Length: 539
Image (cartoon, rainbow, N blue to C red; front, top):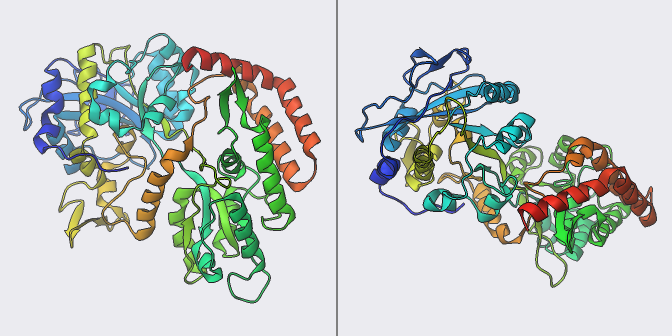
């Protein structure tokens, strides 16, 4: 993500105050997980207070006024951060907002949220991942107007709005409306990693077309790229299990012209595996398999095993997610001296535009409660909170969440900001002080820092370059009851059919028989339901 324009520090500190004025911001049962969340809260000063106490009294700060925003998010660490430390104090000073955060352990987060919905005690702001977004209690509350829709407000907060790609705003809609701020993830994340040192050894360039990919896979298998004189290398490693989004099937199929999951075409929803383009991709993978240019055991191995195999140094390419290039460049050189991994450009046919099977670009939402004692009760209060998030999207506040405070969390060496390590935890001091709070702040999909090594810098450039070629899944944000009920069963039918075709257990006629089976077992209903949803909310 490119850095946004720099705003004066004073603006970041007073933006939401001047935009909204004063007033009660509501109350909540938010608490530190070390305290029973059903009965008490912990303020940022570390004092325990009963949940009946008003948590929104006005307090003095450098701006002369302050208010509290109550929040809830998942806790992934063993312990919640001390929200009275210098980083939280500086955040409050810069924004005029006290964050009162209930950190709930991730394993109990869904249950806790359900309980809070039932007792009408959700905080003003809370974060949910994609899985929790499917919670039936949350969806019922949403349908009952329990959460603020943001569509009529976002354009008034340009830093917030522009922080999120327009496609991701669109992807994150639920039943056609924007019910929260997307928690960003890399959009063009799926792809293919390749051994740059093998390319150099054989005098090849990274493949961009399907023909070039085949020739490189062949050369990596047959031309002794590691120079040891043995027939012990294979072009590509992948796994037949797991998500089609990263195991090569969907990456290739989308590049061949198939939908990225689903597409609305000629008045109906069409699944990728029901198209001729998907079949062309399967035929391509089948040829790689038959010719020995892809691992023969891909049917049996899982996601972890494919990376373990790649890191042993005998494979030239691996399907996966492109940000794993950082880990591969850490692990592989420990086994193979001089090994270097890079990212294959987005693939395409000769003379055609590249196509990337994009992710949704987010994992869940930051949502705004409209019902209950701890809710954001008025439009004025909502605008106050949105102004806070608008301030968080400015460069000053992004520097605070990415670098922290100079002399405490980072130091400048030769003009480069380098994070300071906390020796007792083997983590950065910034991570120690912040904890997991970034789940409910404005946090970029890919964090770029001054001190990034060449691999991370190249990854950032690659993400930016791939953005124009992202193909979206048209069912994102839509709901199919049949898919909810039979999703795993139906997915297995077509995943198995694809694998069987690649290894030669069935022919093309056999594959389409499996597709007919998918339709009869519930696929037709899924198509109808997604079509109706698309035409109601997206068309």
